[in-house]
Image 1 (cartoon, rainbow, N blue to C red):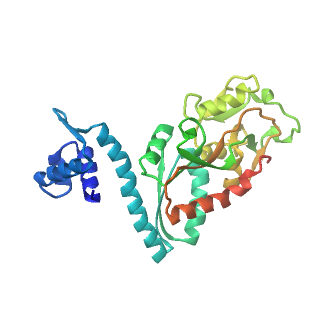
Image 2: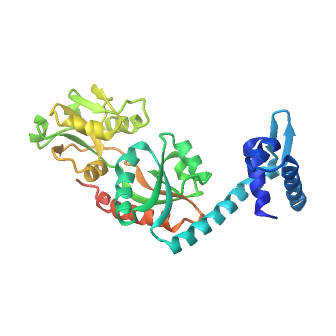
Image 3: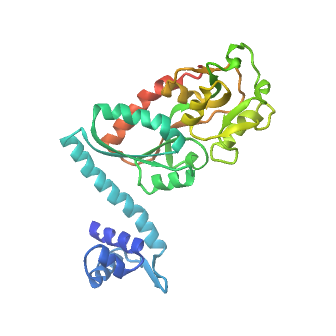
Length: 304
């Protein structure tokens, strides 16, 4: 078996026809057909089916593609490792995350690593949908994910390393009258002006859980905004309240933001590094992971 045969098979399936694959590979259609025939002869089974819509892989073809992609990836990874050994400061790393975590935590890791290795290229893939991030990792389009461990990310095929728990606190601007109170229940604040993510949005269920854990409905909200930076900016007026993860406050280090003494009862969700098991990571991806561990150390403390 030749790696070139695997490359041709992958291209034919992605293109959907021999003709399109030949154009992509800058070769002739007979050469493509010959390569597929040689691979099928070597394996001893039919890998492709032809129909009116084009070409699609058989069950054997899908199995070959699954392992073929891994083989091609490992070969490329070997080349990257050699490049890193020759020049440790150059190369690229691909990270997947949600926009929320990327804005605060992943950007902090990137800035710290970039100061040490300014020639590293960072590719950040963000998506609110966990199934898309799961697919990006499974198809090896990203090296790793920084994400909350929930839903698809509890898959036994994935490795998870805890960085911190996404603990929440109630915060206000320094001019807000509530900052002078020493004892506050969440129920005391439901009629205040809140800045919160939309309850029907991606972040909504987590915030809704915070209120329901105290027997409350989602409060009257004056401003619906998901990005944490926007919500914290509005607190400076002294008129609004919001709920934010402790990680956001520790990493953003915004002056004039006060944590109110409100005890929240809910199950926090761990945030960590998610990788494919039995996958060799590049030295630069390992550098990113080591830096993520450094940045997360202050976040491991649960209390503010």
